[in-house]
Image 1 (tube, helix red, strand yellow):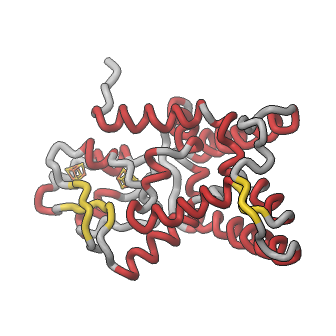
Image 2 (image 1 turned 90 degrees about the horizontal axis):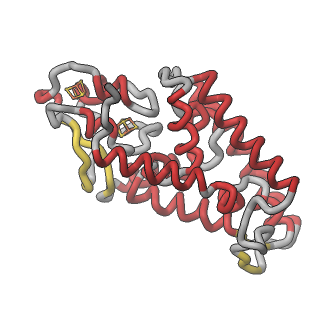
Length: 248
Ligand code: SF4
Ligand code: SF4
């Protein structure tokens, strides 16, 4: 018998699968290339604005974007039908910073050599409103989807979120700033005394985190947690819950 997902998780999966289906339309608003092209012409483009909003949202919602909206998240969770094995977290989580830092440096250098930003054009390089409208864009689309799919199949659940995602660092930084300021925001809280050590939270976590260990320490903050709520919805003891509060 196929196990039914909890209702909240069905909604979440439905949203991220929908954004993945819409990816050919919206791809440019997450593009690491279009933002560089915009910078070379002094244009604040769609992906510049979207990345900025990701950072701002993370100040109050952590990485909820990754768990609830991201089209690449939808693709990778669909790939669990092929490989639902856990990703080995740890040192490999730092790979994305080796991509993000030089990329941000390139954007800054290109913008400076262009004389700075002078105008805003959300639809820069997406004048038709559709990101995949020409053969070259179609090839780009297939390459992006292919890489995310391949890593998920070879390395396990949401491997690209851990390793190559150029968007995740914006939210990790936003959340780090939130933690420094200690203002109220969306987070997980846990009660170790309610836990019955069934390990369902750990085995179901899309980011392959040691959720049970986090519960035992009653310290749920983790830079790779995407606040998807899978652990919350799989805990029969209600040992984990969402909270909008200032905490650890
Ligand atoms: S799912 Fe709940 S009861 Fe089971 S190990 Fe996790 S926190 Fe404990
Ligand atoms: S710890 Fe819970 S909320 Fe965070 S990624 Fe894992 S399952 Fe999702």
